[in-house]
Image 1 (tube, rainbow, N blue to C red):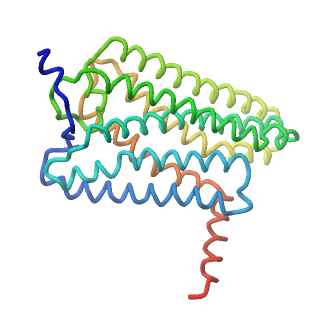
Image 2: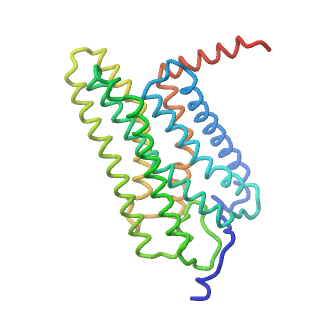
Image 3: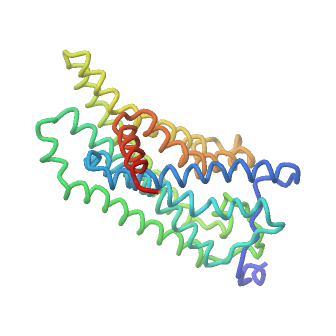
Length: 307
């Protein structure tokens, strides 16, 4: 076993979502459609919030980075997953596997804290409207974005390096969505992952909960029904995204080990990495009049261009 554990692996063979040949083509079509919608939606949101002058506010600044994050981690996973449906044996080089894991961790952690920053932005907009432009200055917005990126990059690099310098079991067949099965289970690695996972989830969720408790308190004090409606409308899309994300994460990581099913975990991972990035642009565009207005203005400008 010692000799086997020291085997130098140059590539891994990825298990697909299903082994049933009759499902390969339908699933490829389904996930290709989802991935294309996700890329178009998130890339479109990045471009739209950058180009439209009426969307140059802190809220859309954070939304642009959220779309960039979703574009990033869906692209880190999506193409290789699609390849598994059309190639008999999907392989991934050792170095690219490490890179993919590193990017996925970076974007996942960043998403949690960008959503927290958006909750804080909503709190300032509703509870301190007169000081909003002062508190949420361009410098503050960049700090609220840069700190999560730097912190996420640090955690990502540390975790990935710790995993990939560990000895491997000698088997190069892995589950596509169970990257952590690559390494030998060591107490140190598990402890690092557990500590940072709990900290990231609890701290980001705590910021969101405290922000919305203060927002709800402010809304209940409003005398105007129109003011309350507008405040709820401002928070609606963000709350929907937060609920979907944390319910999915809770389902993935807070089940008792005895109730875990490999297929269930795989489907939850697929939903998190592929479906959620597709849903979020739709949630923000369908529920947001300003985004829909920006889309209409962009479409009219495109129609005016000479052919």
